Amino acid sequence: MFAEQLAGNLIQGLVLGSIYGMATMGLSMIFGVLQVVNVGHGAFIMIGAFTTMTVFTKLGLNPIFAIPFALVIGMALGFLFYYVVMQRLIKAPELASLLATFSIGIILEETVKLTFGSEFRGFNWETGKLDLGVTVLPYSKLIAAGGSALVALLLYLWYHKTRSGTAVRSVIEDSEGARVCGINVNWAYALSFALGIGLTVTSGVFLTMFIPVGINPYMGGGYTVKAFVIAVLGGLASPYGAFFGGLIFGLMENGSYTILATIKGVEPFALTRFFSFVTLLVILLIRPTGLFKSQ
Amino acid sequence: MAMLKVENLESGYGSMQVLWQPSLEVEKGSITSLLGPNGVGKSTLLLTVLGVVAPSGGKITYEDLDVTRMPSHDKVDLGLTLVPEGKHLFPSMTVHENLLMGAYRKEARRHREESLELVHALFPILKEREKQVAGSLSGGQQQMVTIARALMTKPKMIMMDEPSQGLAPKLVGEVFETIEKLKEEVGLTILLVEQNAAASLDAADYVYIMHEGRIKAEGKPEEIKGSSEIREAYLGV
Ligand SMILES: Nc1ncnc2c1ncn2[C@@H]1O[C@H](COP(=O)(O)OP(=O)(O)OP(=O)(O)O)[C@@H](O)[C@H]1O
Ligand SMILES: [Mg+2]
Image (cartoon, rainbow over all chains, first blue to last red; front, side, top):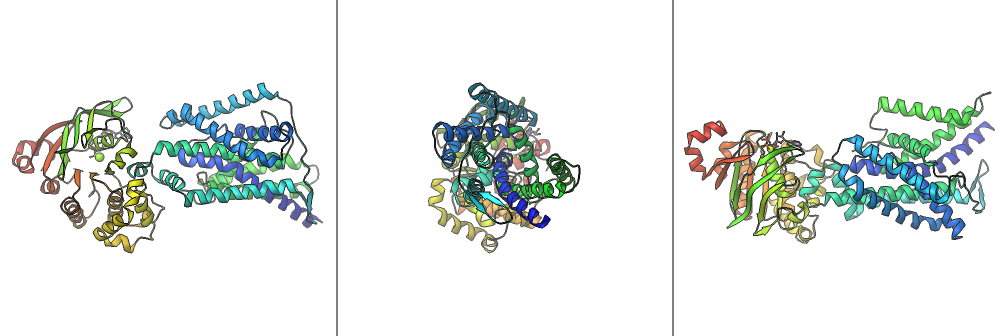
């Protein structure tokens, strides 16, 4: 009975973890290339959630169609914020870029609040369910998890098989070396920032497919914090490390939930968060660069 | 004919000015040497010429073209590149991948195979080690990769910033032999910054002496060698 419950929850954890991983890749990419920590990360996930809701409720389309919208909106925002703000701050002390991304997050939240209001929203996308015996998975969640894994694979291929991906990789390894090879380093920064934001907004679509409720302008904060934990698990600067970090985090969260729920008088959900952060601190202490190899 | 002409260049980092209007010319097909003690701005001059550091005044002319504010990637397209001080390789890429990065630009890519042949002829060891990760090479081999990667950009002119730094004496000799080969056999123009004043004076066709961001003396190597005043004041040899 307990074993079945644990197995079921771990499968759920793997599915959620895939989406968590996707939701962290943009953060890791931006950190890896520009050495900028995007404190406004969660606000971009929120933009993805609102994009999905609008596509579903206003346009009446399948949430899958929100993916191209989210990617385009995200990349446009990424290029805009890069050229208007970040470009000038790359050489400035770290605090400047932290405050800048923090402000960008708040500006986005308030803009969405002015447009959509601040109540919690949700929708219901009926897709049918897959019964695995130990647990039941709606196809919407499977699509979100599969889509996330596919994006991680595509990102890996982009980095290693394309010209622009290779250029970005060289900038990560040594930006002065990249310059003397004739790589336009400023363009590599702009592209990475835009792709990082594009991935993050898109991850908001997948997260909303998984949890189609609780959509509101301030929903991003919790995701920012989780993404930091996952990024550290995955090695900070490596986007596909982040994906595996997400899988581990999803398994940990759901696994510990099942175990904690067996203890009498314990509120398991609050404790899982507690354990996540204890894990984060322990990892930071023993392996400050994360569990996976980083640059 | 002057391939590169630098006039009254000014640049620095933030509010700290490093270059105080040095001027110099590099003749086509020559090895021109820039000498001077530590911290006088030699690297800053090369980085400013390539466009990695932005100039705040003066003029840079390359092949009769005003390139003062041209971004570095466009200069690489015109056949100008830099072997930076301290290597700046891509440590987790293989030797081969490092070389291919040198041929990133369109024009360089078109000549990639012949550039590879040239580089492998100059440094046979790089062919043997092509699958090895660059970060695991010895210091001397890494220096070869840096020079080779610069050659892959299909340059007409290379600026070299202390290519013999940190190498064993035997390897220093090899680096200088390579530099002379690049001039004689490949027909490159070279602007060379070196700590090793003696070897540099032997290789150079013309010499500039830099001090505190300014050019303090210039002349043919024999003239510099002949002036005990210059040698004692700036070179310590
Ligand atoms: N990235 C940088 N930021 C701030 N200051 C710098 C930077 N690079 C160099 N400097 C300063 O600029 C001055 C000139 O440095 P530069 O590296 O050009 O000298 P150099 O002649 O190449 O010296 P060396 O022979 O030691 O290589 C020095 O005072 C140095 O501390
Ligand atoms: Mg120097």
